[in-house]
Amino acid sequence: QVQLVESGGGLVQPGGSLRLSCAASGRTFSSYTMGWFRQAPGKEREFLASIRWNDGSIYYADSAKGRFTISRDNAKNTMYLQMNSLKPEDTAVYYCAARRSTVIAVTPQFYTYWGQGTQVTVSS
Image (cartoon, rainbow, N blue to C red; front, top):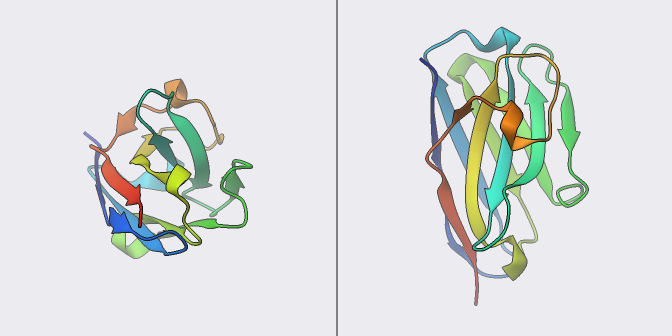
């Protein structure tokens, strides 16, 4: 069974940075694609970025390009999301997710495994 555990959320001032981590366990992830999503109150879950575990191929949503960077550490089975120049509208619960496919997907329904989420609040 795949387990995903996010960490790194918190309260940050506008313009600040945070790095989220997603520790994965339970499988060998070479055939998996993993992604970051977020969900603000009253809004649908939004895709941010995805990374193919075997070769590191990356895809970003337009909303994440330029400020967010996805990466992974194979040795630690951990995925990261570096977020810079944060804005109040980035406030949301951030989730990591995994799917057993090497095809990158942007729709939440295509991801099988989810972490519990970590709250990010951008406020002065």
